[in-house]
Length: 52
Image (cartoon, rainbow, N blue to C red; front, side):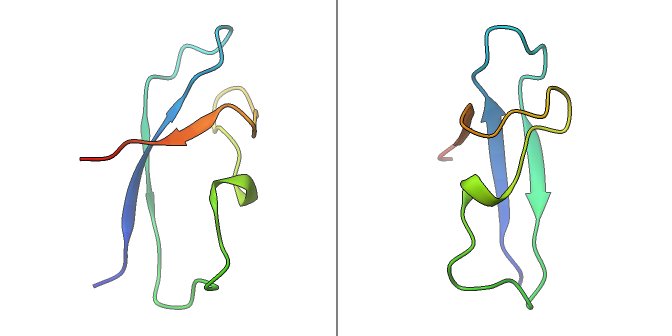
């Protein structure tokens, strides 16, 4: 089953609390949070994975 990550945006100016990123089997092994951006504010350094 492909991975799903829950991610939060920690930017004080962003109102998005969390989003889910659904991956496919084709994702590169070296893919990380620095490869994506917040869908609301566009920030990259403000993302952190929510550990469940």
